[in-house]
Length: 147
Image 1 (cartoon, rainbow, N blue to C red):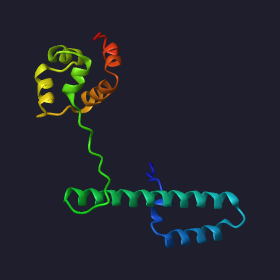
Image 2 (cartoon, rainbow, N blue to C red):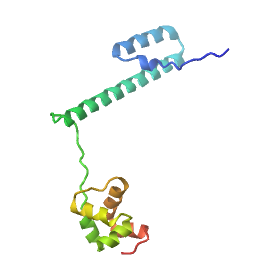
Image 3 (cartoon, rainbow, N blue to C red):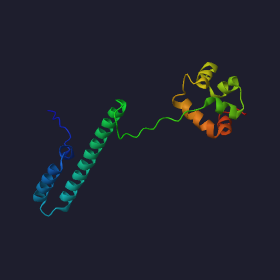
Image 4 (cartoon, one colour):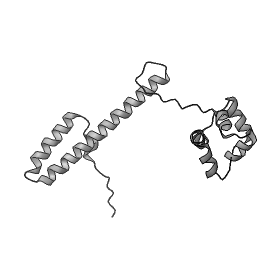
């Protein structure tokens, strides 16, 4: 015969300050003079408070994101990505479009789109270009391409 059980976590049921107060009172009555029981109860209360704070923070963030997306006034802090001037980076390195594209592993067509501004670098290419803007020769050395 197999008995299936599920994990019980009291912290998941302590949603309000009143829930926490009632739980603590019950634990104090049950504990008698067992300090380990009280310490365990306090750990559960701390975890419940952390979970409640996290849930509140996530909810607030979602509300702010929805307001911002809808064009409504919001307290959301927006961090627009920094623009990358790919042409300026290439010129700083002193390379032709063909040489730069080959050195950085992108197609010449992609590089031209980036330089015209009708496309923007994404993901790892964006990161590499940000690093190259600050330390172009170090990037070229790391890639094994002397400038």
